[in-house]
Amino acid sequence: MNREAIRLMYAQLIGISRQTPNVEGKQPYASVSVVKLYNEILTELLPLLSYNLTHLQCESREDAPELGGPEYLALFRSKLGALIEVLYRCCFSDEPHPFGGAPAMSISVNQTATQSAKQSVHQELRVELQQSLDEKINAQPKDSKEREFLEQVKSGLGKVKDYMGFANLVLDCAHKMGLSYQQIAGLFS
Image (cartoon, rainbow, N blue to C red; front, side, top):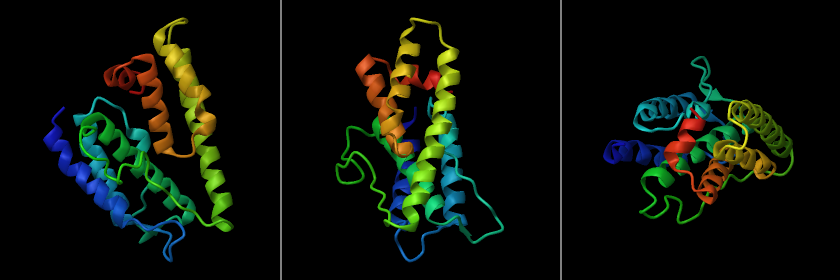
């Protein structure tokens, strides 16, 4: 893995996260150009990392200047934060955390209209992750360390609210079980 090649893209992602509006802001939309840049950076990162992070790709429509609304923006910020966290943990953990030492990027949400949208995104995320984990568990031999790891991740899904939370759950379970990044990357590719 070429750390210096990844550094520029890592810095760009941090810049995107700082420029992306909060969900409760006056413009709770992600611009198509920002989402396109994010997807381009992710595409460039994929061959440099030993992880399959294609699930962090964001839908982009060229025919609209803005995407989604509060739900889409929350999902985009979640995926962006998860990608930054993965890069931080695998490449730059010896440096200060990009968000002031916080383990995760905060996503603040208004109580009323966006609350139900957020719950809908969380539910969709859990269902998507649950299905993916079930497939991966069934592909592993019984009594294998990998299967046990995937079952631990699956059991922790109830606490996951976004992709960053899932990335943290995966990395924490891997650390507890003594699995390397390469081993878990093989499970998720």
